[in-house]
Amino acid sequence: DTINLQEIHDTLVAIAFEAGRMILAADPSDISTGTKMNSADIVTETDQAVERMVSSRLQTAYPSFAFVGEETYVAGTTHITAAPTFIVDPIDGTTNFVHGFPFACISLGFTLDRVPTVGVVYNPFQDLLFTGIRGGGSYMQRNASHQLPQFPPQRLPLAGKGDASRAPALGKLSAALVAVEWGSQREGENFEVKARTFRKLTASNENGGAGSMVHSLRSLGSAALNICATAAGQVDLYWEGGCYAWDVAAGWCILAEAGGRMVSGNPGGWETELDSRVYLAVRGAAAGQSEIVEEFWGVIGD
Ligand code: IPD
Image 1 (cartoon, rainbow, N blue to C red):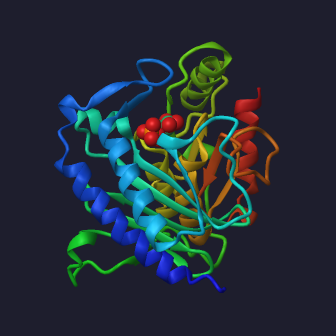
Image 2 (cartoon, helix red, strand yellow):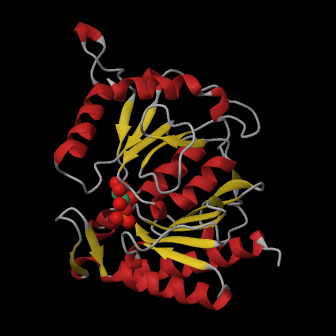
Image 3 (tube, rainbow, N blue to C red):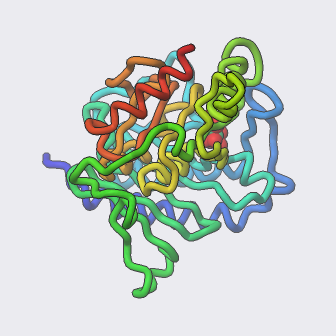
C-alpha cells in the first residue's frame, strides 16, 4: 500500500484543532494531578485526556500504524522503529499551560523509517498552525482553525528569512537570537552544563569574558514551538539537552522542509537521531551554515 502523506497531514490537522478545543476548554488551575521526575516536571489530566483522544482517532484512521505518545511511553520498552509511526506530545509546554502562559501546543509527528515525514504543530492560544510534509514544504498559518481567506498559509521560512531552496545568509553566533530551555532536569552535571552554556552565550566579550554574547536567549517553554520558530526564521538556533522524540518529531519535519536542520547539541554530531535527546535546531540550509554550528559547538565544548 502506498501511504498518502497529504491525507495523513489533513487527518493530523483536524485532530490538532480538536485537541486545541480541549486545551482551551480545560481549566488549568485545578488539573494538576502530580509530577513525574520533580516539581518542575508537570503532567495534567488534560495532557492525558488529549493523548487518549489523539490515539483513539489515529487508531481508527490508521489501525496498522505504530503510536508513541508522551503520556503512555514506557522507558526501555517503547521504541521508535522503521514502521510508520505517529509520535505525539498532547501538550508541549505543559508548564505554560498550567500557568496560563499562552504558549503551548499539540505536536503531532509522523515518521517513516524513523525519518520525520509529516509534522503538525498547533498552538490553540494563538490559533497558530505549523505544518510540513517531506518534499512538500512547510507552512505557518495564522487564525488557522477559522480558515480566514485573508490569512493564507505562509511558506517557511518567512519572507526575509531566506529561501528554503538556497542557503540563506546566517550571520555569526554573536548576531543570533538563540532559544534554549531549562527543561525539567534541575540537578547534577546536566543542570551545570545548561547554566554554564547560557552564561557563555550571553557573557560580554569585553573585559576578557569568555562568552560569545549572542543577541539574546529566549526560553519559550515549548520545544516544538522553539523548532517551529527556528523554521520560520524568528530565532536562529535552538539548543536543548533533555527533551524527547515527541517534543521534536513534528518540528523536525517542519524545520527540514524550511531548509533548516537538526544536528546534535553535542559537538560534532552532524547526523543525529530522533531519540538522541540533545538537539541543536539551526535555521537556513545547514550545508551552508556549518560556521555558526561549529561556533556554537565550540562555545559549549569549552
Ligand atoms: C517540555 C517542553 C519544554 C522543554 C522540555 C519538554 P512538555 O515538554 O517542551 O520546553 O524544555 O524538555 O519536556 O513536558 O511540556 O510536554
